[in-house]
Image (tube, rainbow, N blue to C red; front, side, top):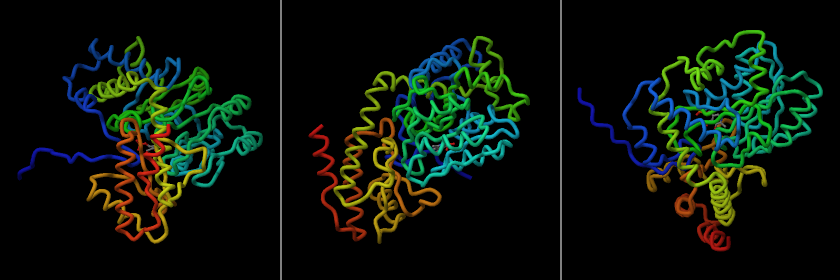
Length: 390
Ligand code: PLP
């Protein structure tokens, strides 16, 4: 048998994640390994923690990346807090809200669902009503719903959670590093993310942060956490002065994450958010000029993940295949009930650029024309006008 040397194609990843990785991050990944208790690595861990606190906007000491993709973050957030029989308000307005519901069930909690349409936000009123009628230990909600492109307002929800003594657990897998998110100012108790979206790192780590209230709830559990691997208190002992072995640290991935976060720090998180917002707005102007519609509710759109309604008569896969084959460019199709109905366009981290917006609009215009969609004004022109006027 003969196996060729690995030679992956270089694509432009404008889907729901992963996004493209900076060569600096790839270089960090290939740096020499040291032991997981090597003083060099312990310093890298400390710096990674500080950089994560900067990006999460938190003073929480309990902030670190855990091994595993975003789902590890979701599972850790839920299984550390919830005990069998605990009621949890689960906000479901998309695929990842459904996932949270599924996890709460598996952990043995009692999910109380608050449903909204896929593409709409969860209202404060619906949460307050559910809080009044339940004895919820926590509220679980997705900040950036990657399946719909909705950016959920969190600040007011957090006040509600506090007044009913419930913890607020927030999924920021698609929002961290690309959308406004302020753990301390908004009063979020547990927030987790993934490395492969707006942080532009390969998938494999899940940054997580916990407030003192969350920690207090975990320390006062009546039963042991079922998962050993995701036991955050045990993991924390490796990330603090105690340096107690829990698992072999994912050394190369921590190097990579540190470099990805260092790049964010160099740009400045506020500048980065403005950039994401501007490029998303330009993309939307282009889409609307072409006579296409956005899927997510206006004023609540995620700048990092833009959802476009597929026009009547156009076949989802034909367009995505043409973008892939002719332009070497990946966008995402719909998930779950939105399969075949929307496209998901990620403008995440370093992929959120004027050049990529123009390139994608141009590619989409040409592709749709080939597929028989002729209603369009120039999307590219509208985006350029937007850039020139702002
Ligand atoms: N939550 C959200 C909002 C996501 O978009 C995703 C993945 O796309 C996840 C959780 C799960 O993350 P992962 O696929 O990295 O495990």
